[in-house]
Amino acid sequence: MKNSLHLPSGYPELLSALKRRIERAQVRASFAVSRELILLYWSIGRDILDRQGSEGWGAKVIDRLAHDLQVEFPGVEGFSLRNLKYMRSLAEAWPDREIVPQLVALLPWGHLRVLLDQLKDPVLRQWYLQAAVEYGWSRNVLVLQIKSGLHAREGKAVTNFKQVLPPPDSDLAEQILKDPYNFDFLTVTAAAKEREIERGLLLHLRDLLLELGRGFAFVGSQVPLPVGDQDFYLDLLFYHVRLHRYFVVELKTGPFKPEYAGKLNFYLSAVDDLLGTERDDPSIGLLLCESHSGPVVEYAFKDIQKPIGVSTYRVTRELPNAIREELPTVEDLQDVVHKLRSEMETLRGNAPDDE
Image 1 (cartoon, one colour):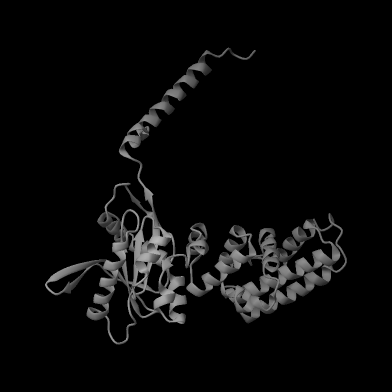
Image 2: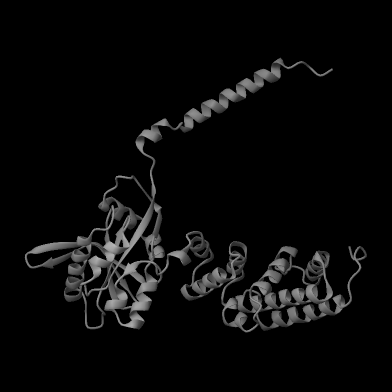
């Protein structure tokens, strides 16, 4: 391979410089230290981009570079042709040298490859980069959040926060809520009752907390509120450790109705008096409905002084029984396969022999 390609000027010097840089990085830290590795990868990608731009290097030179680096550092993973191309993409995606150690290098290499593979829009890529750093997402969670379109859902709930909360808290609380909430991990029938959906959410509590976002702690379901001589029950109760507030979540099937806001306002007053302490700020309410009309929600919120938001949710719907009964069973499909195989064997048996 070494004699099959005419090397451009400057190639030996670059290879030598990269060798020294890699050796220094190995001395300073193990390759398991992600930050040092990302900084190294970015610098290699930057050099490749610069050489391609100024000296017209082609793809075959990168092939050669990958080969020579693997020869110089046998047993060290990360210098494959595919990875070198990722390094070039990394430097191309974040060309600002200052932002790399401050933000980009805070994520592991696997996370960055997900961002490079799945997000071509630089604005969206930056949004998910910052969110992954802030919330400490694993790679699987990052993939899930991208797939669910979190950027388009966050902060989209209809609320009265700006009217009833001070500016710092209102902005943060608004960003915490989403619309719609993605409960695709939950499979229910079209006619499912609220309690059925609630039980399903509790069975998938980990997924529910992941969808709610960082900072939510589960307190309980059907939490009793004794008021006077009556007992009222909260569908779901959470506590947000960053806002220091209880979150009362009421789950409704069907569209939003104005009376829901009044009842949730009552619940919030009771929670503040019966459960809240001097260290807790006033509670926040969230109504989860299948649909809502913006003007109806706004009028319902007009004279309410408690912070309340309204969001929709989506779940995976089971097929109606009538349709499911029309679908073939596994046994039916197996019978069809066996029949096709028998017919093919018969046809092969009747085919004339080749002369």
